[in-house]
Every structure is written in structure tokens, then in C-alpha cells.
Length: 171
Image (cartoon, rainbow, N blue to C red; front, side, top):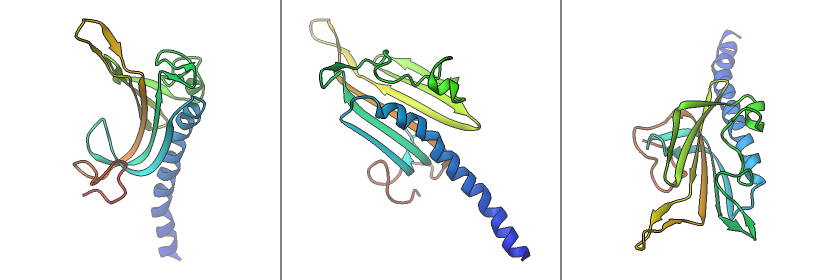
């Protein structure tokens, strides 16, 4: 009986972590599901983190779309894409997510926002590459990618083997 209780006690944290991981990606997936898209994928398990370049376990959501999808304009700074910055008054903020500026960066055509809730950290990347063409004009790609990473644990000190999200174990 003592061994059974010990086994249950050891499994509870693993179950709790798995549940937390599953819950972490759900609000992001649901928000992005409302956006017209070419593809929207959720992966639970191992993947290579864009932030660290290491193999991590957790959940990953990736949306691929374009600036004008099916005639509807989708802009990174508009509500049409989905407000994933957890600013006060947004659904993510109301759900308990808070922006952590230590994980936030903004660049030409790309950005990342770190969001935390109850010990979970999720990184939200937005990418719409831009460049200056030969005529000196600012050109912004019509392709838009949103990637949400909610890592739970580090699984290797390098990228996952094979294509991302990786199907094998990280070593």
C-alpha cells in the first residue's frame, strides 16, 4: 500500500504539468481559429524552441495566413488577426495572462511577446517579413505567420532531430 501511494504521489506532478501544458495553448488556438487562415496546427509534445534553439516539451500552435485572405484584410496590428498581447481588457488578460516585458521584442516585420499565467510561460511570435526594394520602397510580405510556444521542460541542449515539430526523442 505504501508503494502504491508513493507511485501516485510521483505521478501527480507529471499529470498536473501535462494538464497545465494542454491548457496553456488552448486560448491561443481558439483565438487564432477565428482568423481566416491557410493552416492552423497545434502540436503537443517535443519541438524545437525558436527562442532557445533547444528541444523542449510543451505545446506549439502555428498559424499561416496572408495579408488579404479570401478578400478580408488581416493586419498584424488589427483585431482581425487576433489580439495576443494580453493587454488590459483583452480576452487573454481577462483569462489571467500577463505580459512579461523581459520576453518582448519588436523588429522590422517580426515581434515576440512573452505571456505568463499561473507559472506557465508562452511566447507569441508574429512574422510578416519586410524589406527595402531596389527603388528604396518599403515592401511588406503578404505572408503572415503566428507561432505560439508554451514550453514546459527542456529535453535537450540542441534542436530536435528531424523536422519540426519533432516526432522523435531529443538527445
